[in-house]
Image 1: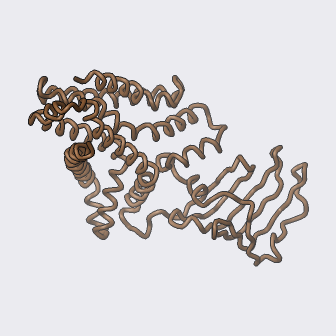
Image 2: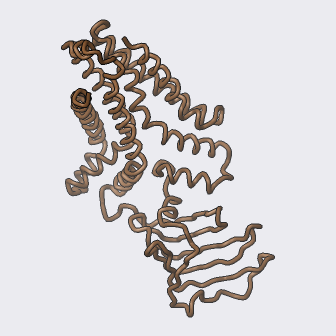
Image 3: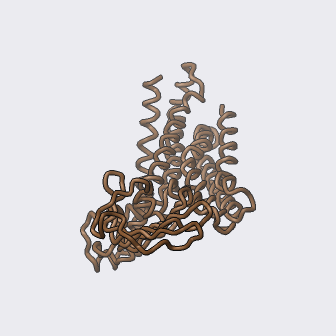
Length: 366
């Protein structure tokens, strides 16, 4: 069976790669016409242009990958039924469900791949592309220094950084850290003109501290935290990382799932509508990669029956199912982000319903 599995996976992967490559090229060409004048004016290196267009289309991969998988599955199964290969395989006693396992495996593999890309690469790539576009392809102007305010509610600590470079968030300029007590009164405020994150520890350069009493009253004036105003002090009890601080400066669409979750946990007092929207986007971030295996579930029954119902009918049915899947996803967006239904249900609604429909048709495949 291993030989047969490898054969079916090889038959499927070729069309998937061709379809996905074609969709990406079409998407890039549509983007070229909008930015070609600025590219020609700035004349950036060719590898910067290539990186820019790949980064621009990166958020669309969650839609392009399922579309490529659906068409490739239909094409592969049509070829197998047209050449009677499926009939020959089943004549050896192999069930149709066992023959479809390699297709489901490929769908699961692309689901995992899409999830990894969404978490690791897509947010940063898209942010870089937007910064490049805003700077009119002047690479030295991309991602200028930003300010950051970060709340660590778990440890009652507030960071305010006047300048932080997204390209090098390990160095901060003009830092203020306010530590509060459990009752909300100030315990102390540490200020430093510079801070660096080295060996997983924060080092403050020339830090000064202002302490406060139980009644939130200042105790004396600012004093050097070290020996003098030129001391470099290791802040062992500060567990915030540079990426936590820089995530506070990013728009929501540039955050990955871990950053979204951290934002929601550290901002529990958001307005109810904003909280619903952010919770929906977090669950949608997790749910959308599963479209890759959902489309396989309803593409397999459509493709395996092409010998009886015709190619165009199978393609139409699969496309109609995919259109319905994304239409229901939009309904889930409206209902989940407004709080009409729980945000998690709105994000997973199309996966649950069309996953059940696809599984039903797959189980009744003959």
